[in-house]
Amino acid sequence: MRNILLNKGDFIMEINLKNIKKDKSIDELLEFGIINIDKPSGPTSFKTAEMVKKKLGLRKTSHFGTLDPLVTGVLPVALNRACKLTGWFMKKDKTYVGVMKIHKDIEKKE
Image (cartoon, rainbow, N blue to C red):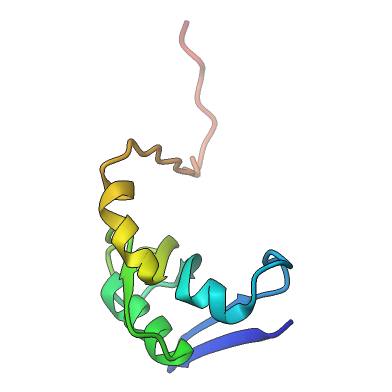
C-alpha cells in the first residue's frame, strides 16, 4: 500500500492507505469514499478539502462540517460520488468530546 503526503508550507498531512478494505481497489475507494483528516491549525476546512482534491486528482470533495482555521481536529472529507452523502450525515446527531487541563487541584462538591 502507499501513503499520500499532502504538503503546503507548514501544513503537512499523511494519508495512510494500509488499513483499507482488501476487496476494493484504490480507484474504487477514491470514487466513493470518506477519509478522516487530522486537520492542523491554519487552513480552513474548505482549503483542507480542496488540497485533498488536488493531491488525489479528484473531481469533487466535500467536508462534513467546519472547523475554525485555528482549531485542530478530525475533519471527515467525502470523495467524488460520496459527496452526495454529506447532507444526510450533517442532519444526524453529533457528540463532541473535549479535553481540559486544569492547572490546580479542585475539591469535588457533592
